[in-house]
Amino acid sequence: MEENKCNCSCEGTYKEILEKYEKDKSNLIKILNDIQEKAGYIPMKAQKEISEYLGLPMAEIYGVITFYSRFTLKPKGKYHIAVCLGTACYVKGSQKILDRLKDRLKIEEGETTPDGRFSIEATRCVGACGLAPVFTINNEVHGKATVKMLDEVLDNIEAEEEKV
Image (tube, rainbow, N blue to C red; front, side, top):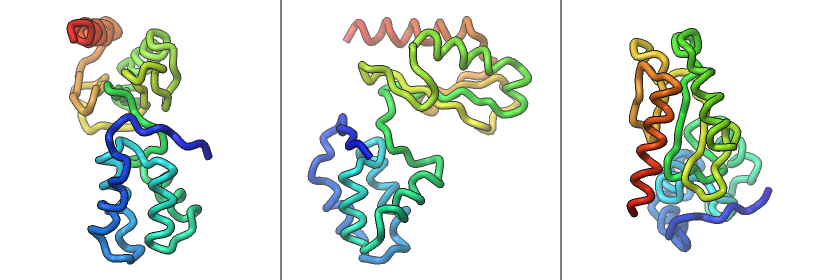
């Protein structure tokens, strides 16, 4: 696996996180959660340190990371956009929203733009079926969504980014 570069100041923090927990494999998910919160993903370096600390094979740690959708092996963008493809959203046109997003950002699901600003994810349900179709940006729900609404939201984000 290729080592991803962390876009945060998380170097040296894995040891601090690990030391909060006893060397017991039942703490694996808590440790992964803390690292994900700190780094935004689970880097290879962190996986190696967890493996050594808990005495677990790398394959077991990787298996847990890939089993739970909460965890990711790749850094997400500053603006993480998730489009719901659950039944209610899909029937009401969420695929068109996802297609427009991929076309506009020139990336696929699970990818991040080269500048690190945007990432895309397709989800199965965000629990807002009454607002279908739905997309979220950094967990902020945008309901009764349309392609036009998506473009307006992205235009606003880009305008705000230019001010900074």
